[in-house]
Length: 72
Image (tube, rainbow, N blue to C red):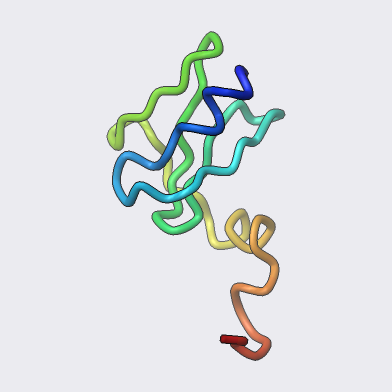
């Protein structure tokens, strides 16, 4: 995946940052809990092509999401 492309891509829904998962060939939006597939090195940034990530997958990306104090 082209590093420059990864730097400019954002979630099409919330315009938030995406996490690149090389092994799974996905771009993940933590806010919307969606994983957008990458097919033949082309990100498919369509909501109807994305899959909802599980709470366990979300926690693996953001381990302090549940429990622990909220620090402003």
